Image (cartoon, rainbow, N blue to C red):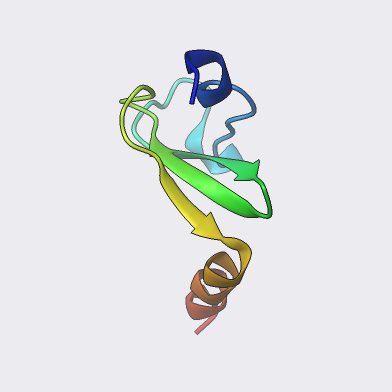
Length: 62
């Protein structure tokens, strides 16, 4: 993955505030979602397929 692709389309929760770098960032990616640490944008990326992400979101509703 190129550096340009790694930095494209990332977003944070609106609850994070504009100057908060201590959170996770996410982006939609090929039917799933990518997650990374905002403090380390060049670090590892966790990639979840859409089914796994839906299970995770469903588990938060409990």
